[in-house]
Amino acid sequence: MTPADLSATVLHAVRRAVDEYVLRAPVPARVRVERTRPGGRGDYASAVALQLAGPAALTAREVAEILRDRVAGEPGIGRVEITGPGFLNFTLDATADVHGALVARVRAQGLRYGHGDARAGEPVRLRHAREVRAAVTAHAVGALVRSQGALVHVACDEAPDPDWVRLGISYEAGAPSAKEIAEAAGIRPVPAGATAGELLGRFGPDATRWGLLRPAGHDRAPLGDGLLVQGEDNPLFLVRYAHARTHALTRGAALLGFTSAPGEETAETSAAETSAPETPGAESLALLALLADYPAVLAAAAHHRAPDRLARHLEAVAQAFFDFHDAASPLPVGDEKPSAAHRTRLALAEATGTVLAGGLSLLGIDAPPYL
Image 1 (cartoon, rainbow, N blue to C red):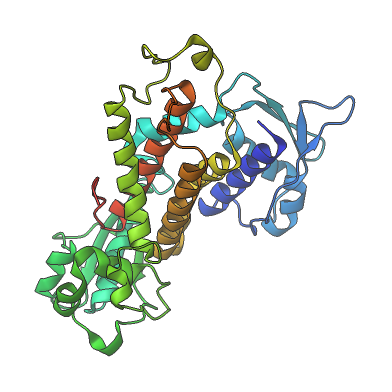
Image 2 (cartoon, helix red, strand yellow):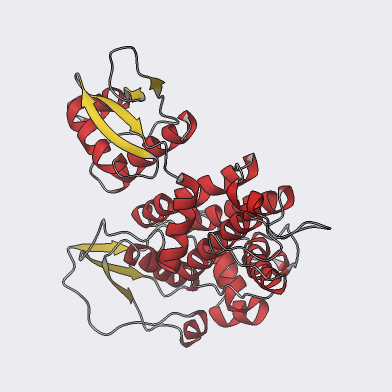
């Protein structure tokens, strides 16, 4: 783990603590970590707890304990200690494969990667006006809040529009005894009062949902023909095409006789190739960082009731995937033979596809394996 990786890990812990309402302080733009001085403990130290103590109205040591609990056990971290008034000291696990562990976690958890339990069992009731954008937004927010463990009930102030069913919107009978009544307020209606039936006839369900959810709720939803363009200028197409491309890579690898399974060797893979794992390039690291941030993005989108945050993150993941794909192909090119490096890249591509599919599903949008 590099100092930059450690800084990002601690910053991620700060975001988690804030999103979980455990720490009430502004999230800094970055966290500074330094090599410990002679006689100090661990490999690196950070004074971030002292920086956050005042805004959080806690002692630096209390802040350090909150962050320690969220950093300890992260891949690449061997031990976390608190010294002095609240300095965090980190001992790294030099044997840990941080990037491999992240990819393995995404693949193991599948579409539930990023889901949390910060609001486990909390009853939440969402109400919205009888307007298509309010309805779509309320149900997307409900899915995000459920991803954090809450028990969600969505209701409409009036009889729902029958066409909403074609947008994947349904209502459950009854409601939990909610401690929180959350109005889906501040959602700017669709221009000219367009109905669900009109939007569905023009764009279909997936493009309609993206067009309504991608802008922030208080912004106008620019529902234009660009939603149907099959090109990289259309963010929805970019995200879905990136997902479909990850499946195409898996199919292509199978035709070449290899998979992303770790340790697998083919008849054409030399011992030298399998014994020297590839060092991730800048494009791979950028993509890995976005996959690592995905759980925090889900938590923040649920907390702020902002599906647009998730949509923007999926766009960033898709763009980073294509940068990674173009820099180092997961499939052999020309006379290349399948190697350990290709399997590692393929595993990262497949993990990316999982995150894109999971995010789109929370927005109620299909993620087809072919496009």
